[in-house]
Length: 352
Image (cartoon, rainbow, N blue to C red; front, top):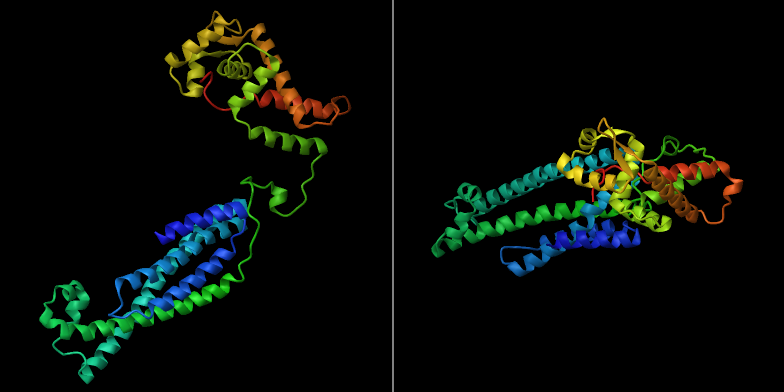
């Protein structure tokens, strides 16, 4: 629960502040403190104290685990993002496997030496079934009260051996704390756009002013919802047409003469879904079905396409307030193409 709470909390804070370096530092510090506290645990420690120590450990882990993934992803090039994330997961798995093996070895060696010494000096009875208890720890709970004097020395030896494991882990956590101080904090990305070849290589990218404006206007346009875009154009052009029909009209305008079967194939819809909408467009006089069954846009439909494109051009002009179309013929042509192209989008033809 502590890991979950701190992971979610740090994620929210990082998204708001853009800072993440402080969390691994605080997290590794909490982990080191919690492991030192756990190293004080013995057979007489209450469950409440154990729970509080584990709570501190969970808080520290939550501050570190996901934040390190963010740090790695944010420092990697877009093209290497998958490799970087896989690398974090891989080395985390390898570290977990090595850690479990190392700490298990430390516990076994420490416990074996303690048991041998205790049996030699008579602290632990030779009659105590050490191997059986290690194979099945539930025997300790099942043992009758009369056997408690035999069990308590073993529990003490086990707790003392476990303290060594926690101390070793605390030393490693301190090293992690020191390393986290040198973590380089890179400003969080505000976009997942893949860099152009020149940008990725650190080389200057040469664009004309029109190219740069086209890139920025296209970026702004791509953020708009397609249906909202059509709605604004329809309002601007003051054309009596629904958004789905306007969308289908532009798709047919770009597709050229096309059969109903081809429309269904391209958009993966059934003819029963398409035909009512297509019939409504034919009834409006903006689309027609010729003798061969091909669907084409009528002159009235082409006029609607022109009006909507002009409305879209006007809306794009609003994004470039202050420029003069008369003095920038190349930019005006680019905007006309954008106005036409941005009214088309992948999806189902004439879908609601």
